[in-house]
Image (cartoon, rainbow over all chains, first blue to last red; front, side, top):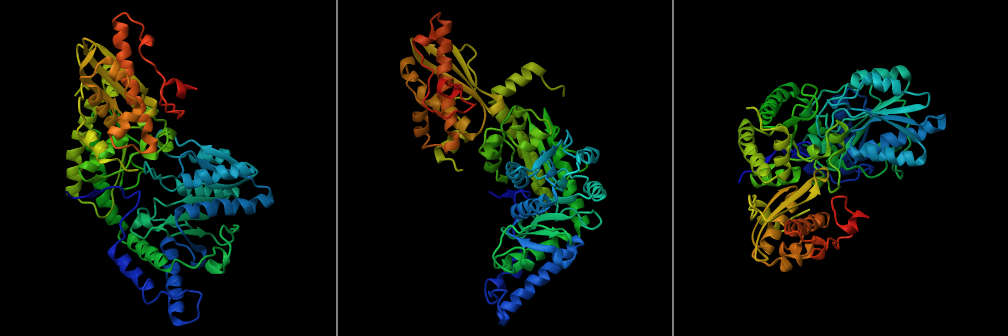
Length: 396
Length: 150
């Protein structure tokens, strides 16, 4: 059976050109970039070039890019690093949204324990923060606003430029977790007034375990990892040279022909959404327009997400869900609850995230297989019986 | 988290799915908020469970434990069926991941709920026959057993 991978928001395959670019740094160019001999200086040069390339993809300056171990480290460093500096000036308030990634939310929880105060903005039914509500939440002691560029589960794109403008006018720093956006949306940190931005290579066909943090020049942040002069003395540890090279190659590839790729992926996405919405009592989660090109997130009432995923897996389809059972906790996804879904509805969610490698034929197959699986699960669901009894049969 | 082959078999080809229109007892446990509901139908003749069917809303383990539990009580006397523990269901499935143990508890409770309903319909006090306690001690909000309610 052929595997159809449609979980590109979870991770992506490493592209061949990325892997080819990485291999030499595991082989002949294995040297430590801090060394003085040529296999070390060659490695150093590769890291420097990667920094130039990543900076140019973001419209940043080279010395504003810091390589990290990935999105979670970048988020932790940005938020803790900035606030631990700003507290010296009496700033202890942070504004965020209710549906950030846990790398942001749990970091903020940890800061709350230290005495920092956090405002969690509503994301409303469409999964989008309202800039006017953000502006109202700014206080005298607000130091940082952290709002994700695009949501990892429902793919909704936030009004980043507007938020950037508001933050700038109030003299508040603005961090965005752009892990899901990079490689899908053209980002210019200067034009959008972004002060800090987190990204992760494996979301756009780069390797796992490597990411970057953009920090606008002049923004002070305390180190998270001490112990060496790497990354301009701000992030210690021998550089993950192959990973950094892989990240930069993947980022350049992802940034090229973005429009053409997005057009094709968006068309496939909309075809899936339109077909899935034909299924009785299905609900699209998140705004239909302000949405990542590859993101489909739909709830099917009366069924539970994990069993849906297992059945899809049985048909060779790799997808994801926000049900409690897939997270190992009792509650369904905080993202789906944040947009106002009832628990029992949120349990029946399915996320399909398309990428460059997906084809129309795969979409055909998914569209054919899914309704059969939903029907089968609903047929054995006592909850579905109740829903039909209470609300009546579908009109069509 | 990986399921055993037996769990996958019972999930993929669940036994005894459906309803019994003239059931002698029906039991339903679980909570849609928590993501699982099990409903069991039993047909009792001469104190023996001659037929059993289920409908389940829930994860892979919830469906597999429902299926296995129905297999284990089919053809058994009520007394025997009441002795079925969640542990026995788990063992029959070659184990469950720790976070899924409560599914087996639900299956045990669903059977007990169906048998209690049967006794009620007979005009008997089910408490005389069915103990509702389970030994999961997990404090799951899923679980409606006495030890978990605390």
